[in-house]
Image 1 (cartoon, rainbow, N blue to C red):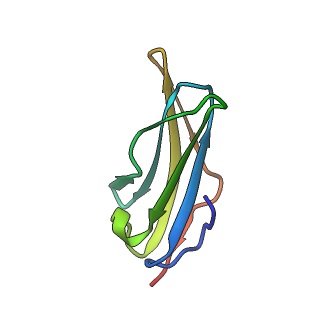
Image 2: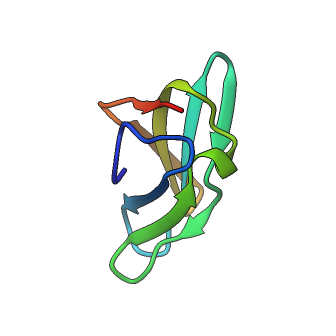
Length: 89
């Protein structure tokens, strides 16, 4: 995450780094609701990039947990960001 305390109108940058050719997804969860940036395939360096807008992604004000999930050859592994995303107006 480029910024863990964005406003609803802010643009963000997110990165997933894993094995080349893996499919990555970054998701945000709060109060039983999950929003996702969508799947991206990593490049030859094992990196996938997202440029996105906080409000347009469907996030609302509050504290969201962040999870990155990578899948390759039928194996899936997830990790949670140690910092939450705190969205404000």
